[in-house]
Amino acid sequence: MDYQAMLAIGLPIGVGLAAIGSGIGLGGAVGSAMDAIGRNPEASGKIMTSMIIGAALIEALTIYALVVFFMLQGHIGS
Image 1 (cartoon, rainbow, N blue to C red):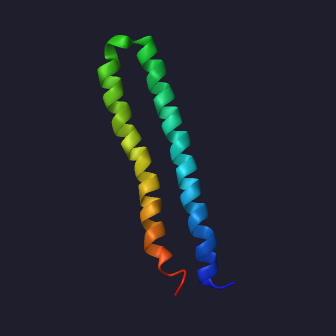
Image 2: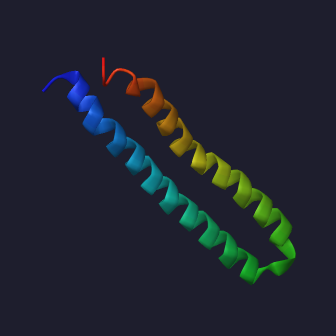
């Protein structure tokens, strides 16, 4: 098996795992934020701001994986 076949198999799997990890992380972050807002509604602004910043950082993992996928995709067919 050459490196092109390994890239063709590994790249989609890597992006899929990154998306699954991002989904799990976002679900946990949003769930915890909603619990915190339910316990202390007065602090919802601060909690929501922190949650949105955290969600953006979690989502960056998937974006980085997608960028690497597109960078290495050109090496599959050549």
